[in-house]
Image 1 (spheres, rainbow, N blue to C red):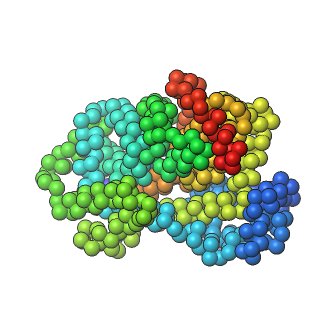
Image 2: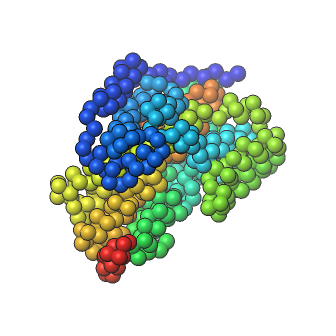
Image 3: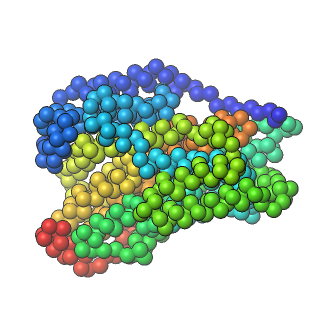
Length: 532
C-alpha cells in the first residue's frame, strides 16, 4: 500500500471548539433576549407575514410573529460561526437548523420537514453520487487529460482552468461542472505530488490541494454573471423586467455581463497565485504527464467509463432541457440508480463514498433560507439596509447600484442565489424606477443579479462550494482536502475584490459603454403606475 503523509491539523483559535461553541450560542441567546425591534413588527404585520403565521397556528399576533422572525435572525450569526469554524461537524450544524425551527415552533412541523427535503437537496445528493461514481469508473482521469492535457508548468494550467471554467459557467450549470471536475482536480493534484515524491512515500502538499479545489470553485462562481443560462436567479430577473414591460433579451444580458467573465477569471487566477503561499510543488506537468500515461495503459474506454459518460450527458441534457418538469433532482437521482443497476459501483461502497456531512449541511442551509423568507426576517434585513443606504446618499445611480449589489452579495452567502434575487428584485426594481435614473430598472436589476454570483466565503453560499467540499478527498487516504474555514480564509478577500471589479468595470465602464435604451425608464414608470 502506498504510504501517505498529510499535515492538516487545526491550530490556534480554530482548535478551541469550546470558544466557538460559546460564541455561537452566546450570540444566539443575546439576540433572542433583546427587545423585538418595532420596525420588524411593522414589516411582519404590513406585508402579511403575521397573518400567515397566525393562520398556521405558530403565532397569535404581530408581536409574537415578529419574535419568531427575530429568532431566525439570531440563528444567522450562530450558523456563520459554526459553519466557518467547524465548532460542530457541519452536518450536525445543518441538522441544528430544523431542530431550532421545531423547538421554537417557527413554522408548522410539516413545513419544516419540507424545507429540509426538496428538489435542491435531492439534486445535491445525486450530484455527490455522480462525482463518486465517475471517480470509481476512472472517467475523471480521461476528463482531466481532455481539459488540461495540453498545458504545461504551473501557471498555465491554472490560468486555463480559471478562464475556461468561468466562461463555461456562463452557459452550463456550474453544479454539473463541479460534479465531475472536483474529482478531476483531485486526480491532477495526486499525480503531481506522487510524481514529485521520493520512492513509495507520497508527501502531500495541502496548500496546493486547497488552491486547485478553491480556484475551481471561485472560477465557476464568477461565470454566473455571463448569461441568463448561468442560473435560475438570472431567469428570475428577466421575469421581473418583463413585469415592468422592459424585457431584456439573451444577447442584451450578455452585452452587460459576459465581458466581466474572462476578466473575473483572470483575477481569480492572479488572486490564487498571490494568496496560496507555501506551495511546495509548483509544476503540474509531471502529474498531467502521468495521467496521460495511465490513460494510454488503460486503453479504450471501459464499459464502466462508457456508462458513466453516457449518464453524464443524459443528466446534463435533463438539467438543460427538462428542468421545468423534472427539476434538478429528477435527472440527478439517476446518478444513484444507474451505476448500481449496471454494477459500476457497489451500493454499500456508494453509501460510504457520498459525503453525507456536506449533504446535511446543505439541507440545513435550505431550511435557514426558507425560515428567513417565510417569517419576513429577510425582508426586514433588506428594507432596513436599503433604508440606511438611502439616508447615506446612496439613493440613485452608481451609489444605489453599489449598495444594492453589496446587500445582494452578502445575502447570497447565506441563502441561495435564486432566493436572494426573488427576495430583492421586487424591492430594488421599484427603488430604481423611483430614483429617475434613465438606466433603470435594468441597471439595478443587473446589479442585484450579478452580485449573487460571488458566494465565495461561506460553504453554504452555493451548491458549487458544497459539491467541491464533499468530493474533494485525498485519493490515497480519503481525508478531506478542504475545511469550511478555508472558504472564509481564502474567499472573503476575493469576494471584496469581485465586488470592487463589478463596481468599477461593470457599473463604471460597461454600463456606460453599452448604454441603456432611451425608452427604458418611461416604459417602466408607466407599468409601475398601472400596478406593475
